[in-house]
Length: 455
Image (cartoon, rainbow, N blue to C red):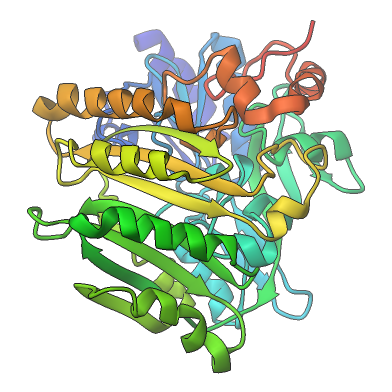
């Protein structure tokens, strides 16, 4: 440790950010990420203020033979943003959003969260697709796909990416876009952190807001099967202007199990009420929080369901259709959920992302259908066994009803094998491996859903 400390002191002389060792007072809080189930201890945390700091950290890791993990927002459930005994490149200080309202573009720092992004862009009446929880990081969500409320209308976050600044394994700082390093640009749009550390993003923006129509309507859990059939019917008829998600969860009182539909409508306000009426008029809801809402608030309304420090273990699969038997199994499994914080979420994929060819970007999940997420979440270590067990048992029960594709951002820490890679990237795996070999032949950036370089 003394030897590492002396070398860190030398590095700090030309480092703009902060370098934290386990002996530093801020190291304990800095090492923690969103998922409380992950408890890793880096040898060094490099909190970078720009691309030059990132390059210096990469060089230091290579010189000291340290494994490298990269933290953007630190929200990813798998815990791949940190490492035991290695170097965490932490972008949490690299937060900025520069909006060009005339060009309808935004340049964003690699540590920015979507709540910050939405606040700055909505001040100009523009937005881009940015998840469904505002505490999520821009970097991880975008590089792994970027599903969000605005996906059906504008495409996923990565579909609105115009370019990135990225620090490569050999410490070079390059730009990747349609007209420069286009192979790298293809790969980072879905390939996660396999190719380097993205220090900044440039996004295309769209006129939207500040007011939209959306929210949540909920019913007792006894109505869950009927609710999911309604959800399926609405999904079958959904236009690009509406985004739909269903959830089986426990109400905030932690005792009442409920079924709910969340929706966002981004079309003409004159017809918004008519579009969401089938949801609001179904049965006798116990909660109706659907109506005019600022887009910024819509994108943050689920934040409370994902508290920092809660223990998380997820499983998810994509299915082309939601059958009656599948619905029945989903409901039966949810009723066995051991924690009031756990839930099953079903996200509908349709619209703009499904009209983009599988080979256009590394992201291959381009079919229309439903992503079923078994979101096991609990508060304390004594819930680890039941929480992990319920997710795995539910995953097994749902296997007859799902397809072979999976959303890379939801893959947990035990989902990193060749089968998971094929499920995430489909026919794009070999091309990704070739690009990996070009830009990171030694696989320095491997603490991710790893794409091994092609020999």
